[in-house]
Length: 116
Length: 114
Image (cartoon, rainbow over all chains, first blue to last red):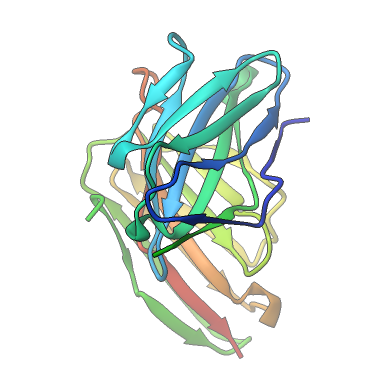
């Protein structure tokens, strides 16, 4: 069964320090992996994705993520955190099945708090 | 703005009411989704429409009824809801089949069932 795990409910980091938000996944086929961010009272915003190709993907607002097939991980990273990065971050996996069906699974979310 | 709009933004309804949520995407996408976001629970995919055909229904109770009249519009018809249906309902769209697949979300409708 397809699943996504975000092991940390909350991550605290000082402004200017590097940040990492963890995500591991489980799918039966090739994963399509995504990171989204949600600010209070807003919908989710797409940050970046891995479909195929280079394992290191770069996205919006200076975020990047590394696809690690052997560890089934897709951790979100940023070299220098900003206070404005404080938000809820979701990892997601999509799997396309036979008959045109698809499954989309989101992690439970990780609250990122950047401390000034 | 993500190009996906939802109305209304807030809705309070009694358990015997009938209401509808509306979603419109202005991105030319070919797939649309309904999600339920409840406090302290993972985002739940409810329905997926690809090329206006439903391709996913995650065992959602029949009191929720989706409608996709065209590729730009998606509705969620609600009737005889329960208090536990109170949540943020998010609509999303994506352009599948072109290497994209990322979803663009609307701001959501905050639903309260009394």
